[in-house]
Length: 460
Image (tube, rainbow, N blue to C red; front, top):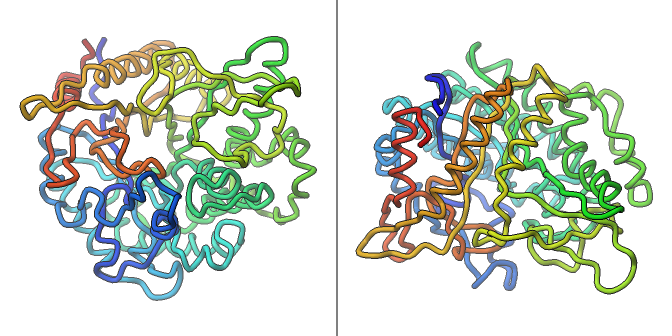
């Protein structure tokens, strides 16, 4: 059970989840600063003000990555740290931080994989409408060019967006993520403007970065298990909203007809202008796939309470505009601390389906991992459940590679325990434990196991 020498093993983080230093060196406020400081929005009122203090502990964290032998590190750049109000004056100290990060990675022979957007939209742009506003996509393109000009000579892979499904639907429809809006029509406008931002950013990056750079986008593509006679009809609806609404424009140049039909009572999609779909459909060198779990769905029969166990936080508003008659059923155990089921077979199915649908498109698992209630024993964290989770999903990757699916790498989520969005600091995904009182880092058993896999290229 060997991985080839060129298979990329990495780990991943996100800026707001680890950096802290939210008011330092010219950084402007993001929607997550505003959201997390709004009472009742996050567990215990937790914020990312300090998080893991990665901003001040950069060198030590880079050394940790080197100790683990990572081939690559996937990080995100905070837009408000680079351009505090989203457009206009560039903040040199903010860019310098990421320049030092990239140089530190290269000095340790770790490949930099930069994500331009992992949800921390400048608050000033949200005040103008956020992702419901076409101007935000245009501002994103300018931001992409600024970062590309500054780091493009050294960054190996550029990722435009991380999980635009979450940005649009959880941020603007269910309201469980920043900016916390519950407007289905706004969510669908956000879908399109995020897609447009992806296309515009790639056009700008290609003009200014090194000629051998790789380009990508990362999608949290869902796997739905149909239940009963109505399950297949339910699956088609939510799969269109979750997957087709991004894969269609980005890889095929069109929105699926069933999406437009499903949502016709919510919006007329008039925000899609002539030429937009051509702009969105930019070639990507690799399609990033984030995968954690699966869902069980059927059509609601109209009696009793409609079940909403979709795993994306509790809200009276829906994250599935247009699919009001779809019911999300509880999944079978085992579950992680997030309540998500453990189903590595779903990853196999997803990667295989993508390969069959887009046979020439290279793939990469850009996030996969698990939160568990870690216990510290004599300064150690013996997280066998996390190690088993990762091992089983790496086996799934090996299985599909054996069938000819072009999967080129795997990024474990996450390098560090961190601020887990509306769950605050209650969920630990890291292979390195962070003591939130002292900020001390302690590699868990899973980190040592993963380091052995990376070094040996062998799954045991």
